[in-house]
Length: 271
Image (cartoon, rainbow, N blue to C red):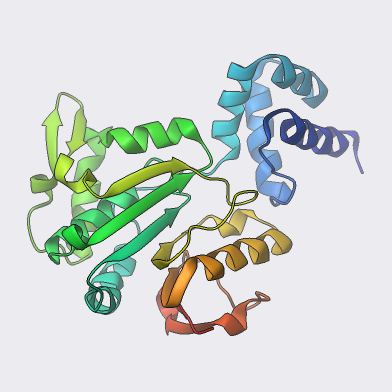
């Protein structure tokens, strides 16, 4: 093992012991790339110096944490997925008088508001409680605020239309200078909370769990642990949605799920 890789392992262990964030089962290639990018921006000579800085400077660690966690998202990301939600999953949710949704790894919240818009158009927003969680309190703060860059709205509007939107996307936000502020009615049944998929416990009795493009950054052991967490958090016949590059095919919990909509990586709990 080269010196740089040893330093990375010590850095990851130091973060776990000092702050409780456990990156020990994240895939190393992606994690190393993000840490090295922060190292270059910091002007520090090596990862050992970065480790010392992290242990003595919490604000510096906060900046690194933003790099290490995955916060790439957008409104109605992968529109065909939301179209499938509208056409296949929503009819299932309509069979419940009240249901719960967990957005795990919600980042800055764009996909949470996308779901709320979809439910509003299907007259279901009054029947749901949406739990949106992430490991990082900084991105959760932005998710709670629901304020996004106005220059991305054109892209989001196209996504909304491709996702089968039945109204005008502009009905769901207010433009203010350079920002788009999501309508407060979308937040009424939302709860934002810090939650660590690696170390924290289940969210019980969920009808739908959405965790897209998070598992790809975990090693196989951690993927299985998180899938077990989701399996135990779902009600009988509950639905799990993963990202386009993720799958249950090689999971030790594959037998607990059946394909609900295979091409969109949507699964249903069967045991």
